Amino acid sequence: MATKKSAMFTLTERVTLASGTDPTASATIDLGSYVDVGDRQAIQVHSIDYIYQGASGSLHVNASMPNNSSALVQVLDLSRGGLVFANDRALISSASMHLDANGNPSNDSDLYPDNFGKGADDGRYVVNDALYVEAIVDGTTVAATNITVRVNCSIVTLSQKDFMAIAIQSTAADN
Image 1 (cartoon, rainbow, N blue to C red):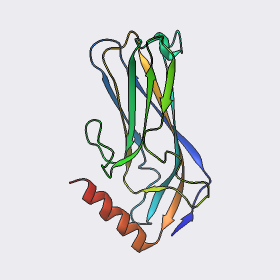
Image 2 (cartoon, rainbow, N blue to C red; image 1 turned 180 degrees about the vertical axis):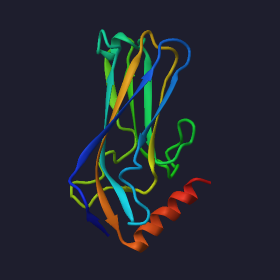
Image 3 (tube, helix red, strand yellow; image 1 turned 90 degrees about the vertical axis):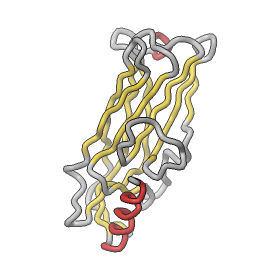
């Protein structure tokens, strides 16, 4: 299906949920240098990791979010302008982090799989020129809450049929 053009590498992006009343944040990971339609070149996402941290003075997330709160983050290959339901084809991965009444954190990957397989041929192929990161915290944050997204991926060349199938599916998901 795909021919590897590169070894696995990591792209990172951070979103900051600012303190105050706006509970949302978004960011874009530019893939324009990696995706080439003419050469049928795509990004193969192998896994996505999420790191939750507080403000720069104290990186502990429980110092920045109130007790009994949660933060949700999603990575999409199309911009939806916010969070989406799990049946949206643009959704690549999502995760959530919860603080209980005592400030004890727990996190979940609420979309299986965030790790797209064990082999080098496993993964989610992306032919769009960007990945979009959307995040929200319920309620307000006490201080800035930072969520870093680490996308482990590689560059691949797809067959013409496979590239067209993925491009058509992505276009259909845009509607």
